[in-house]
Image (cartoon, rainbow, N blue to C red):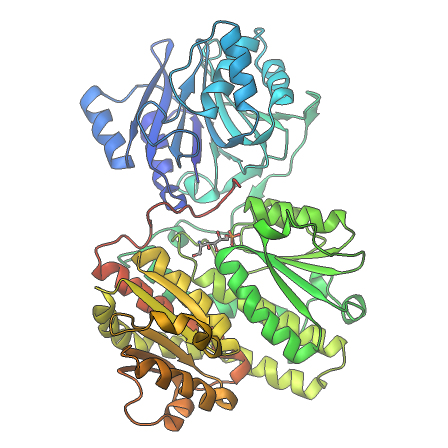
Length: 609
Ligand code: AGP
């Protein structure tokens, strides 16, 4: 999604803006631009392509010299990626950058055209720039406030008025925006990593609040233009955690960070060998009466929910529905007062997940958010909140966020099972103790499976399509393995419940379709073996991810390649079994010449519908 930055201070603004934008590259983008007050005018430089293209353009035409400006990386929504559609966009006296979607931009554009305004681009953003210019009354705050009242949709805006060369303005509705403050300088940014090299102190801008940034500091007003006092926050993510730290890509760095991410996430939530979630408002008394659970999320986070379904149902005997947020929100779901709805999200800003949570609340449900990004919208609006403590996840392909989402879901499942008295305290302690061993188990898999995965990845490089199969938890996990592979390698893949193949999909199998079979659940191993044999006999080459225990039960020669992982408690196997699937996806992407950190067409945080 688009990235916004802005700067007011003593430094070379162009340099700060480009550097800050480079820290938002992970969000996904197709063009970039900056606007700087320079020689009494607003100078804009923008281009289709990557930041490197912008830097090349700046070095040819010269960077605008100045100390106040805004910058943007665009992920195209309205209008193709092109120089002219890139941000910043301007009216005669106003220049802006925008993240989000203006839903009523067509009506607004028609109105402005009827007033004689002309447009250069296809974007909804230029409509806002022109509307601000059209509505300008000499008072920027009043103008912004009046225009906000006309806008429908989601937006975060960085705004410069030609008449106020010492300041920038920022406003948001739905789309995230933060305001950073340093010594004699202020920043705006879509996300914390953009400002970490300059300051760790920041404010979270709330809906319909307007910030004015000057060298002297920042002031805030609400939608009635009443002054606001806001709480200054300090980022506990340091620069190092948002850098590659010697790894070639964030994706492999983050895969390697998983043991620590699990440890950091679970250890503060365990007391006397039992889950302890009281701090987050989750007590036995509070949850014992929930008779159903709905988990709503998107993509990888939804896949963590799929594992959650198997685990919660198995342990707590409570039915669990897993819903894709974009479906849930438009389906009039059956959610009643007192139901529990869990929203899982790394960014905490995914538009569909946020809307789904609001709908659940409206229907009277109690909401529990499992979120990674501190202070994000979902985190702030949920009734109960457990942070995954994965640290910043920069790679678009989620890895450490998924594994920590699983970790939190396990802790919650244990607590719910205790509340429901479906497991004894002793059994719960056994499970918690097994969970506490997972950081070491994941480390073992990273240390021992990387070479196998690297080798198998060389065999996948020419594949056009792949199937992932498994049963039970292995099926839930396969969904994530399949998504990981397709998003970074661009090879088509599907995950299938192994027993369902023969009802149609097996017709796709031939020698050109590799099958990745996950088999970690001993009780259903004979069934999975039968399904593997079925596809093998139709020519598929089999890559088998299995535990040492399962491997012993497998007949000789069933798989072409085996990636063996250690046996842990079987309920917890998704935590270790996902790791080879992530590494396999990573190396397949590398072998195909793709940048796994910035897959085409994808954005890290999907803040628009
Ligand atoms: C997974 O690798 C993707 N980045 C994507 O599926 C992601 O999980 C999804 O967009 C949800 O994002 P969220 O966790 O920030 O809500």
